[in-house]
Length: 250
Image 1: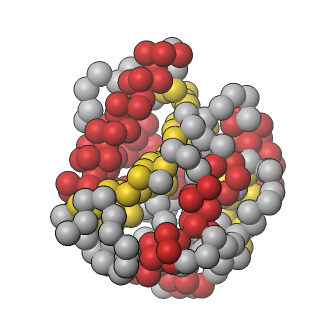
Image 2: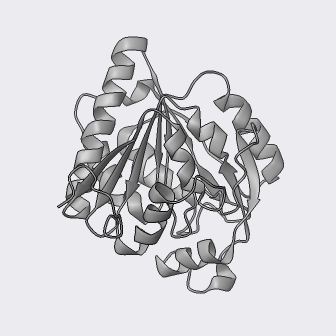
Image 3: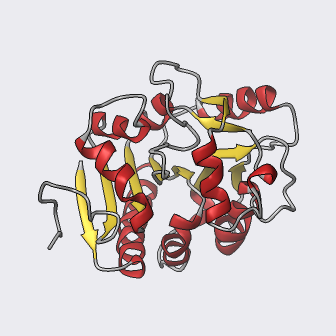
């Protein structure tokens, strides 16, 4: 795992976007297309702003999936991840090949249908974050490290749901859905390359647990240590509790 630490979120976002853009251009040049799994949430704002402004990417050759979606939340809701992907990635770039997780339909059917599309051929790049409870996508602890299913219907724990309130997506905990469709951990690890964007001090305990603790379903993002091509982008706040020296750290 490559770990990069930056002074602030904008610098982190721009640098990660340069990396992602280079990977996309390289995939398109070598194989004619790129398959991408995009993350959502507050951690991705600066990164996606920079990526969608990058030059030289033929977005018509990019096929997009996303990591997760709430069950029962309409696409018109500000917290809808479909809405997020449409507004912050698809409409900005003109991407025409995309597969959205519709949480208003039967989630088990959606998980199966989109998972079938995902399994057609390998995923080139996954964008991800790490939750305050260490979750990867919506795989809260204890995460399922064994299932080969591409997408799962999962129960969201209170810490995960409280994070959504803290970030301003919902006004109260009661408004946050209790279930979601999530890409499985093993499916994420099948991607050729993973770029993980994790800014902010509130993520520091999870970063420490996932990088320096046991590789465990209780720290879902610790599974990233099993992948050969992961780059973790931190700012000085999210890296503040790490005891070992990491690339770019003071």
